Structure formats: structure tokens, C-alpha cells
Image 1 (spheres, rainbow, N blue to C red):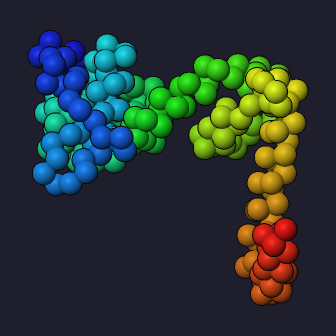
Image 2 (cartoon, rainbow, N blue to C red):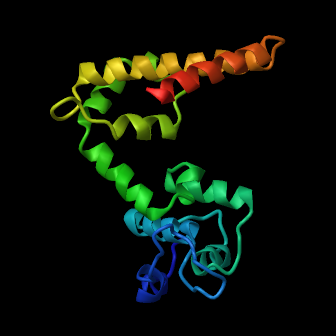
Length: 186
């Protein structure tokens, strides 16, 4: 359904937002991260959605209700974003956008080596996009090298998780503690 023009009035689009994207206390009338992100995405995409009741959208924007998970999923799908993006603090989204705009080498690395990015999460990409190269911008080759290091680190963590749950877990914890103490002493 197309939303009426009243949806876009100043009351909905210009309410102040706390730095973390949610009210500081119960008496604070500022919108939650969900409301702020929903409002932002609706404005960016000239939003119209047919599978969600107008009252539900209005309630989410005003902070009067908490939509069900299915409704949130429908909103995210209709807006072409992950459900997580609806709940991120707006300041983090600004940072994410900046990092992606200023690090095009990552996009080139993804295009030229898609196999290296299998199973990657938004957090993995956020970490990669936020990096810079020595003395300047990250290069495609630098991005690929960092991705390989990140993947090895993830694989090591996965193996470590398995070992910690095995009969060698206690011995491994003791070894890690020894190595950790040695590392932080330096």
C-alpha cells in the first residue's frame, strides 16, 4: 500500500534521535533504532509496502508498539535490507556507509575472489571495510591478504571451540592462560 503524504510530515521525519538510537529513559519520546532506521529507509526508498498494515508501521514509527518478528522480517524484505539493519544505531549506519564509500578496494576483492567471502557476516565486512592500508587506502591485494588472515583466524577459533569442549579443554585453557600472561607482560 502507498503511504499517505501525512506520513512524511515533519513529525515523523525530524524527531531527534539519541546517539545510540534509542530513548535514554522511559519519559524520553525519541524514537528507537527500529523507528529511526525504518523512517530513514522509508524516506530513501520512497517506501510503499502492501503486506504490512498501516497501523503497524505508524505504531513502529511512533514507538507505540513492538512489531512481531514476522512483521519485522516482512519490513526488512520489503526494504531490501537485513533485519539486523533495522536495529542498528543510526550512528553505526553512518559509519558503515562512510567506510564502504571510502574503501572501494574491498568491493573489487569481493568481485575477484568471491570464494574467500563464503559465510561472511555483516560484522566481518564491517571490520574489513573499516581498515586502511599502510600509508593510505587499502589496495585490492591488501584486502585479499587481510581476508585470508581473517579467514584463518575464524577457522582457528572454530577449532579452538571444538577443542575446548573436548577432554583436552582444561589443558588448552591452561596453555592459553600461560600464553596470554606472557603476551600482556611484554
